[in-house]
Image (tube, rainbow, N blue to C red; front, side):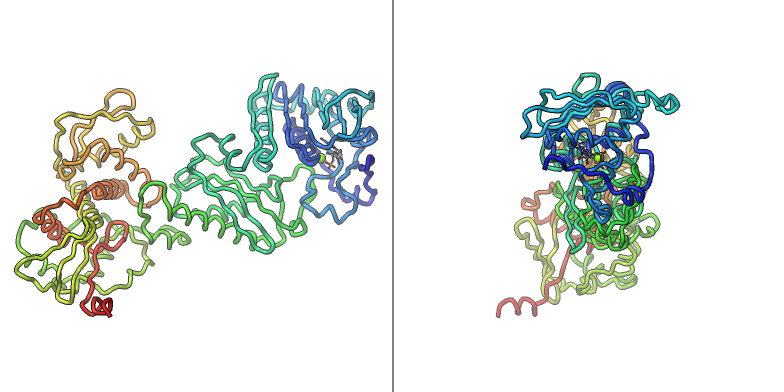
Length: 605
Ligand code: ADP
Ligand code: MG
């Protein structure tokens, strides 16, 4: 038990691709951290000085080594982890080549202190440039501490090749992050020049992600887990709105070793297709757990590129896993967003060509207060088929999306009674009698449709009606939100939102659209901004549409239809049917449906 390290048979040794293990301080850090993990450590400290050039020390509480093994561990091709060639194919033991310590000791001044739990004393070894210096019995904690001083002290050419301390530091930090993400159940402490920079307590992967990337990431990640017979994919992806303009926070691990794989990166990117702003990169941390034999590794000491035996299969599992997680997050949004179903269905297809700018043919408010004949006429107006109209104006609709199957309500002729006979059902639906039965109108969606067409019209014609606030309200925004408001200044002014900068990132709200005059302006503005941001990341529509939709949605959501008077409801109906696309809300949700007398009869059997 004490002597667990064996020399690799020559045959194996020769099959191991030669390579430089130690390129820079970060490669030493990677090897030492992985050894500590392999030794079963639950707590690991990393100490460095001057970008690791003068000192790298890794202290672990793992198994430790016997006196003989401590000595043996520095022999080239000495490893406790490979006993037969077959094991070499095992990615679980990826990196176990038995040459890391030997290589490091060849180009640095190394000191090792180690003790096994059942040993009374520990062993201390010193090796400089492969030269054995001393071996002593010493008091030592259980586990292993390896100190690597003055890297390349004996190879000036390589020492001079090193980059600045800051650059080397950031490479080290990258390596630590990768290992820390792969092993969240292990605690890490990172010191530089004696100062504790980072303490990563043992925990879950989610906790580790938050510890590394900040508290604000917590709400922006979604867990992934997908399992097939050969492959398990687990980890986290960032929600689309959390995507960054720069690459970087993207990690693949295969059996908990960091890998790079452009092909799998592509799988993730296609799963996100249509959900990301242009040239932005989603956050992801995915571990692939698979039979090591299915991985074709070139056992190169520093290679992080690996090939999978069945790349296409791995690709499709990764893609499906990410898609599934995205569906989950989109279906249950944080706020009260109603995700438009079409983009759930079109996640897989690239964003489609949008039709040209929307221009409503008539302004809703010019429809006037005529009687029901007006909407009877609109119902029966077959000059342009309703479907054509929908296709013409639903600019957000993706081309291949079929219309929801339902009887076409616009072909329904209204049996115009003397009185409209509108019935306000719980402030949620409006019921109206029509020839074949009755029509149910979703009030909120109807108001959203009406608002949307009105706002688009106002933006296009710059004919907003704004109501000045009696008491202008100041709203403090984050810097990025303030920048957003400035960016859409023209659009929101066109809608009647009158504002001015009020110092720093505060704005002063002076006026609001007159159709929203009775609402809390600050609340509406904030909701509008939230919705706009969501639209911008989730919808591929021009800014004006995004603004119009956001305001229409939030304005509609805040209406208390319960209290609307008959005359107001009447008006709503008129305005709705003066819309170009009365039957759908801007996000494609149906606004109305005719329920026939037969259907009603069917309910009552
Ligand atoms: P490999 O990790 O490929 O086996 P290394 O040169 O990195 O080769 O390490 C050689 C051997 O030294 C390991 O197989 C292991 O038995 C032992 N060893 C290295 N570091 C540690 C450590 N921190 N704790 C316990 N054993 C270690
Ligand atoms: Mg090793």
